[in-house]
Amino acid sequence: MRGVLLWYNFRMQKDFDGWNGEKKRAHEESPRLYTVREIWWCRFGVNIGTEQDGSGKLFLRPAIIVRGFGSETCVVVPLTTSTKKHTLRIPIGRVQGKEATALLSQIRVIDTRRLIEKIGFLERGVFTNIRKAVRKLF
Image (cartoon, rainbow, N blue to C red; front, side, top):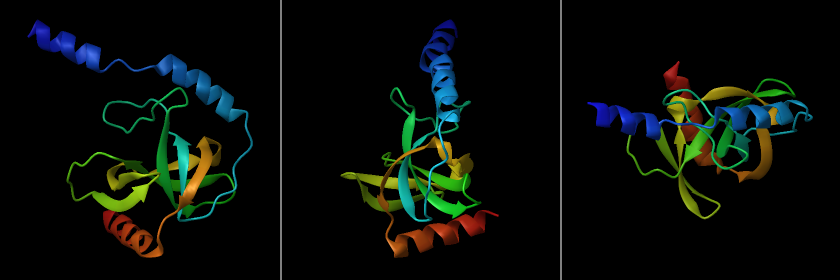
């Protein structure tokens, strides 16, 4: 049992302090202009348990903007390159040369200061499928 506990603790170490510093810097920035259907690099940070994290020194992950709530807030769906199959994972095609999947289970509201760089637009038909799937969640 001790070996399992050590493996679990090693695997679950996250850089919360590093994320806190990046979050403070992001808070000082200006909100971003965005459009629904855009794909952006987004600062998801370091999160609790199975919540989707960002990676790298800026804690980034690509995300699709699915709904706007004014100039400073929007709803995003994070993307992954994982090939795991699940009803809440919708393949969207290639994003920056890699096959990507929308993680509907990780949908969230963000402040637009988390947005770093626009990657592109999601094809209209794929976006329609994602919006329909999101509506079914609620």
